[in-house]
Length: 346
Image (cartoon, rainbow, N blue to C red; front, side):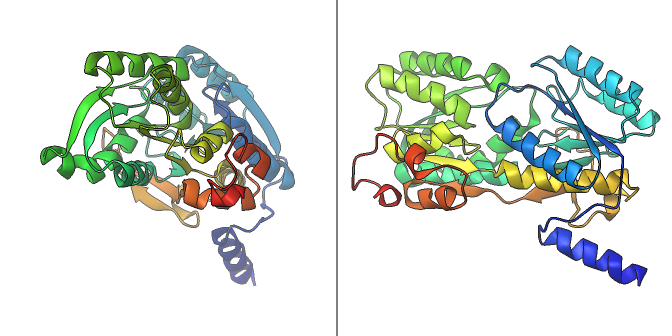
């Protein structure tokens, strides 16, 4: 009977159903690297809902873009004797002593969306290498040849490297063949839109505005890229990528100033993370969690137990996917769009 119950629980979680966790009165903590980015509020709502639905307590801290503050935040959570700490790392290397401290205190950790390389932790995210591939494919469809700019994320965030790996898997051959020229390539401190705008402005200056496509590694930076292009009267004529499914980015896709946003449904990821955190708090071994696979593509090659979810491509042709899912209203997605120019907008 017990085996049947466990099997039913496992099967339901794999299907994404809302499953009441066995743990009760446990404390699940989340250490956020910053709450400045739009998407984290969506993630938090989903995590919190899953945790509290199981009868557990949710607490959180905001590192406000500081590795030092994040270390102090986690030290405080260890003192509180929480059961699981879900961590969005600001700096994947600087966080490692904090992970060890948590492990030494008997507290389990999860690397949420941003990898830190510790084999004792669960790494849960969307397939970011796959996200890079999808962005590059959509941009290449629109601009199969020409001068490309690559606006990468923060140098200290492994996701910037994972994304670029996927991007180069798609575009590498065309670059080697000379069809695509890598005209500009730069990391962007903190993934900040203002820094991305400055990077793009410098790229336009150095190339005399001769840019055909920009592979921006997220939507926030894409907003800065589009602002730089708009100042030169180039918005809408240059292909631009992004990812995260930011509401403003989806509207830019509809307007034609951004080519694609790869939507990583934060509600789906947060819900899954919350459910798994409940299971871990209840004593389920990380390598026994449903759907877990091995991941060793970080810069240090540390093998981790991971769960990778599949993202969704949002272009003008697939805009209705985000609308029908309730991620964005039709009014917001289609604001300012010329009637008849986008099917989903009417």
